[in-house]
Every structure is written in structure tokens, then in C-alpha cells.
Length: 237
Image (cartoon, helix red, strand yellow):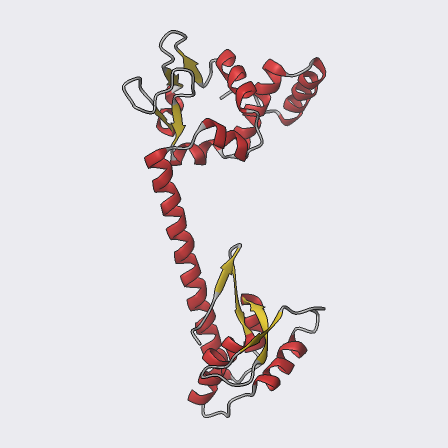
């Protein structure tokens, strides 16, 4: 059976049987200690994690075949808690193992981040996708921004877009000579820096404020002005 570590939502997990056979018992063997049977180990797991009302269990076929054995799925924190019940020599092995998994997990996250950045810089992220991410109405907000004229401007004849020089390094402008140019579309894309800058809560709040200022009801505008005055923050990009 190959070792299986599952990473989900930035948390890793492993079956108790895998942990026992690939970490605990090998470490005990190196320390001159007798191996632990699966049923004994499960009892230790349940005793250590007695605050858990239910466990995610499964039946696992041992390496080389044989009768199936019960196993409990453990998170990284639970693996550490259970491992700390062992002797000093074994605890060190457990800690080294957890640290290695954490390092591998961080490397994987870094790879994902780099891939996302490269993709954003290469292809760009559309206005619609950006607005969908932050729950903003794409068309209404763009209408407000074009009236505001603080971030985007559009040539009504050529449909060429320009951006405030302050944010010029946040976007890729699509020129009429580009195959992706659309006569009636949003001819710009967010790059990786643009996603970082315009993903900040303060910037998203400013965009919502501009939306309210140009398309909101009188009551919404009054509430927004009051909130703005109370926070001491000035509107604008």
C-alpha cells in the first residue's frame, strides 16, 4: 500500500493505519521498541481524541493482503496529538514527519500561486470574472465608473479603453489590432498585480461606493455618505 496524504482546504489528513505502519511502528523499531497492533493503536487514538464525538472511519486492506482493518482519518493536528503519546525517540520521528508534510504542503501552495500568477499575466482576468468574485454587478458598476472617469475611459468611436496611469500596471489593454479585441466589449484584462490591488477590501469598498454614488437610491446615497463621514475615508480611486 502506498502512503496517501490528502490535502484539502489547506489541511492535510492521513489514515491512522498509514500513520501506524509508515511512521509510528518504523520509528518504534528504530528505537528498539515493539510494534503496536492496529487495534491497540485505534484505542490510543480514541482515548487521545475523546473530545471528538464521531470519527471518519474506513476499512483498509493491509499491505500484502489479508483481513481488512478499521482505520480512522486523522488531520495533521490529530496526527501530532496521537504521536506525542509515544516515547521521546518516537516523538522526534513524528515531529520530523509532520514538518516534512507541512513543507511539502507549502511547496504545493507556492506552486499553485505561481501558476495562478502566470496564468493571470498570460491570459488576464476579465471584468466579468472579477465582479463575479466580489459580488459586484459588472454592467452597472462599469457604467458608474465610466461616468466617474477616475479609473477607466472609453473612446465612444473606436471603443479603445484607457486606464488611470496610477493603475496602468494593473491591466493589459487590448488594442484594436489584437484578435481578442471586441467592438462592444471590455477591452482590458486584470493581470496578477491588478487582482492583488483590486482584491483589497478597501478598493472593493470604494468601487461599491462609486456604484452607489451613480446608481443608488437617495436613501442608499445618504447612508453611504454617513458611513463615509463616520469612517473618515474619502471616496475615489
